[in-house]
Length: 101
Image (spheres, helix red, strand yellow):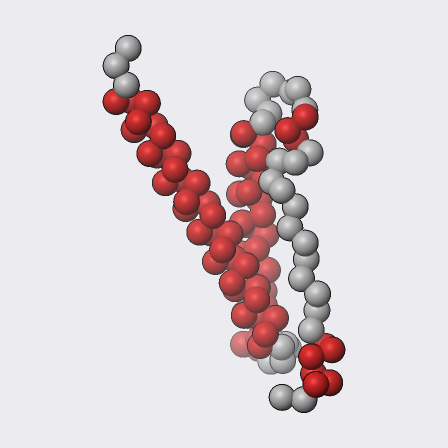
């Protein structure tokens, strides 16, 4: 691998904390719901970007296998985050339903 090819890598996009801006809003229905909607929207965007990258690679429009792999991994991590959120919420609901009142 030549050192010149390293210079062509694109920098990583810094991640922002989910709900950092919405944590201070006092709107009804905000807070956790807005954070969850934001995460779901980011997941949809990551999935669409991965689909576009795969399609571009398959049709020969893109030659950057690294970029396609990165887009697919972003979509995978985003999906795993949502899956883990679902599992945690399910566990919390089950724990609350087991409480005696």
